Each structure stands twice: as structure tokens, then as C-alpha cells.
Length: 517
Image (tube, rainbow, N blue to C red; front, side, top):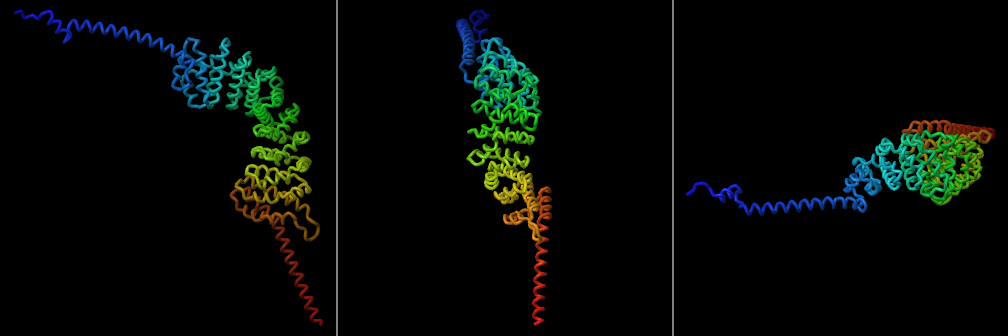
């Protein structure tokens, strides 16, 4: 017997249980599987491309799909740019900072800025600008990123685009950047945005573009210091055109822009008056929308806070009748509050201007608001009355008192605001001063307003204010008591002593008569 294994045995041994036939079958199965895998991989690749493009066109803008959008935007295939950028814009349109952060972290913002140069593809420019508008509406960090990536010169260039949608998105982007901070506003101005922005109104712009321009101007002039009014960069002609609009959104932002321009600078106030805005502003004081009225009142209030001539200009342009209308009709609370503030700035003027307020019959509704309105309105009404009695003549103060101003001023002495308490004390003191100057001649000369203040418990309230935690309040209260009521007490004591003396003399006379009899 041969000891060497047979060929079949060796084969079976090397295959460890697999016969040659089994191995052949196994190899054929593996080759089939490899062919299937390769075919599947090929199909998968083609399917990925197809899904990719389909998603870019039809995919919902959801955060989980952001990597797909990023891949497309950063690729070299320009056919994907528009669809991907549009999806990113839609994703950002929710306005949520977390989504803005995700897009920023994805590293595509610089690419969106680059797309602003795609003059041959205005749709891509529009979508990229729109996406950047949404990013700029986020936090200051987001806005700074947009600036640092060099977007401002590109947006300024897009203001000259012949495509309206591109122009409008550029305007919005610059508005959002300028509205972030004074520093960002200065970047927009130093980038040369104002001149081409103002030029947008030279033709017949669409309403949506007019709204965008008004919004941008309000943001450009929101911050101090205001940019100077150079001839080619003067916003007033543009604002003059915008304020003629009947569109509420245009009017709101135009009036806010004017209120910022008139805030604190008599030179700017005069420029606004010289440009002929006053008649239209007076009309808008009673606009049906409180959203228009409030910035209009802010503008008029800033104008009448200027010099006396500027205040008088508004009075002569019939600015007081609309204020009376606001105070006496059922307008929004914020509107009444602002109207009282405007009146405060007028009663802070000269006596002729106080008289104009009296003549316009504005004092009675202001006194009524001081007595019955909400706290914020009462505060403004208190200022208006206090200024009127502080600067008014004896006759004007007497009129104010006849309209019942003493009681609400005294009632307000118990409020929680030390500043308003001081304002009311100033008003009461001004009334008392006037009373001191108008005493009747003779020994019994008495300040006629002391009794009125006592009657409405004003004296007790002023006594209590001596212990107020605010030093200005407690000192003023003490000084007023020493100046006005101590004199009254002295006179009363003198009268009591005199009365006692007269009574004693009469008694002695009677006794003498009895003795003589």
C-alpha cells in the first residue's frame, strides 16, 4: 500500500473541507457578487448625482440637508450654484440665529459674497444678496463677518445694477448692516453707499424699492454723530419725495429718519424746515396709523425743542390743532404720550407760545390726562403743566389754576418716580410764587393758592416728602415749607395774638364801665 496520499486527498486537505468543485462554484459566486456590487455602486453614483440635482431643485430647505447645499456651493459646477444658494437663502429666512450660526460654521459665507460679482447671473446675485441680508440681520458678530469679507463695496456696486431685484436686495443688505451699530453705519457711508442710494429715486422706482430706501435712510441717520449734509450727500430731497407717499411703510421709515435728523441739532432742524417738510408733518400728525403718528410726533417734538423761532414756525403752520385733536379723541396710548411730550417742548418756550397753547384749548385735556390717564401719559402731562406754570405770567398761571391743575399736581406727589415728584413740586412752587406776587394789599395779605393746596392735601404730602429718600426731593419739600407755610403760620399766630389783645382790651373796657357806674 502506498503511504503517500492520493491527489484527491491532498486537494481535499489543502481546501480544508472544500472540494475542487465546491471551490469552483464559490469562485463563480464571488465573481457574480463582485459584478453585482460594481453595478450597484455605479447605479448608486448615478443615483447620487441625480438626487443631488433633484434635491437642489426640489428639496425642502432643512438643516439636515445643509451639507448637500454646502457641497454644491463650494463645487466647481456652476450649474448647481443658483439652486443651492436659493436653498440656503430659504433656510436663513426663518431669521433664527442658530440657523445663521450653522450656515456660518459651514464655511459658505465667503462664497455667497463672491457670488455678488456674478453680473452675468442676476438671479444668482439676487439670491446670494438675499441670503447675506438674512445673515446681516443676525447678531453683531454676523454683521461684522459680512463686512470683513468685503461685501460692502460689492453691495454698493449692485446699487447701480439694471436689475430691480438685485438693486433692492443690495439696498436691504446695506440697511441691515447700517442698522447694527454706529461703526457699521460708518463702514457703509465710507464705502460710498449714500450717493448711489439717493440716485435710486431719480426715476420711477417700484414701491418695494422706495420702502427699502426709506428703511436704509432711517438706519443711516439713526446713530450719532450724524453724517454731515454735503451737497451731493444731502438726504433731504430724497426724504422730501418719500414723505409725499401715501404708503404706510414708506411714511413710517421716512418720519423716523427725519426724527433722527432733527434730534439735537438746531442746524439740522432749520434745514428740515427750509426744505418745506412742516406742512406735510402737520398733516401726518393725525394719520390713521399710530405707527406713522409716533415718528411724526417725534419729529415735530424735536423741531419744537429747537430755538424759539423754530418752535414758533410749527405754531404758525397750524401744528397745535392736530395736537388738541389727539388729546381729545380716542387715539392710541403711545400717541397721546408723544403728543404731551410735544406740548411740553412748546410750553417750555416763551409766554407767547404758552399763550398759543392756551388759545388752542389744549390745557383742559392735558389737565384731564394728568388726573386720569396711565402713568406714562401722566408723566408727560406733568412736565407740560409744570413748564407752563414755571414760564407763564400771573394771568396765565391763574388760568391754569382755574382749569384744575393744582389737585393732580399734588396727587402726583405720592408717585414712585423722584424725577416726576420734583417736576410736580416745581409746578406747585411756581404757582405759590405767582400767588406771593399777587397778594392783596393790607395786613391780611394771604397767598390765595396756599388754601387751594391745603384743600387737596398738598400740604400734608409736602410735609411727608421731607423724609423722602431722594435728597433733592426732601430738600425741595423742606425749603417750600419754610418759605411759604412758615410765613402763613407766623401770620396766623400774629392774628391770634392780635385777637387775644383785642379781646383783653374789650374786657378791660367793660370792667371800667362797670366801675364807673
